[in-house]
Amino acid sequence: MAAARPRHEEVSDWLRERMESGAFLEDDQLPSENQLGTRFGVSRITVRRALQTLEGEGLIYRKQGLGSFVKDNRIHHGLVRLTDFVEDMEAAGLTPQSIVLHQGMESAGVRVAEALGVAEGAPVYRVDRLRKGDGDPLAFDRTWLPPFYAHLIEKHDLRTSSIYSILENHYDISVFRGRFRIESVNAPNDVAQHLDVPWGRALMLIERTSFTEANQCFYYQQRFYRSDRVAYELELLRGTSKSQKSGLPLKEFEPIFKKDADHSREAVQ
Image 1 (cartoon, rainbow, N blue to C red):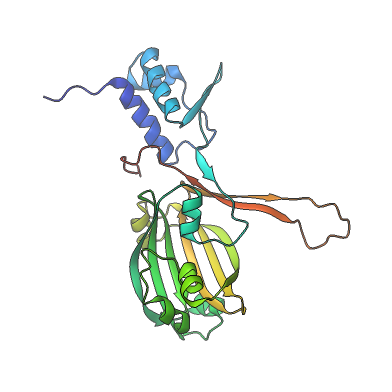
Image 2 (cartoon, rainbow, N blue to C red):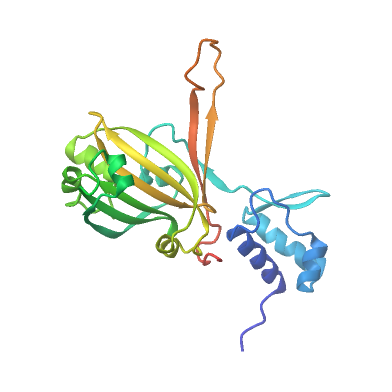
């Protein structure tokens, strides 16, 4: 007969799952010790042991006389230069993994045609990839390329190489600039399944159009990030010149990847 599960683990597991699911966000105050004790029918000593466990894992912080709060345990790194997923993961201290779900030619829809600068219905190459960090699903990429660039990358293994690195390292094609558009969207059903989130969950959609040094558009990408695992921050400089009319200079623009404190646990939906 299996030994009874310690009550303090029931409390810490419930709080941890609530944080992982997004019910408790960074700097949110957790229920009080009395509230948790009443909910689980345990003593304050048991509740305090559960909170000490979470504090030791770096998931919460405690303020004397105020209670316990969710800690911002996300990892920061700079994105002033144009980077790819592998570079972002390595800079964040996470092990990147790419799973190729689809590769093949199709006809360009209106949005893809506009982004790539081709005629609607023109042949384009689509690549779908699930992106993971330390084994956890973080993003789903859908990328379209014109046939010329598709011919260059299709002979390479996109599980271990990024499109940027293939073009730069194998063909001496410099990735010069990128245009970003970031918005919140509800998860489409196929994307939700791959990211292990419920259909309709809010995701961060980043549309990226990338250009070579010759100013040729070589890919258009839609990346769906799990909003509970990734955020973006930017820092601007005010500037001192009164004649400055082109906007504020960008100092930092960085994605923040939230580490899962226990990779053995399944995401709670």
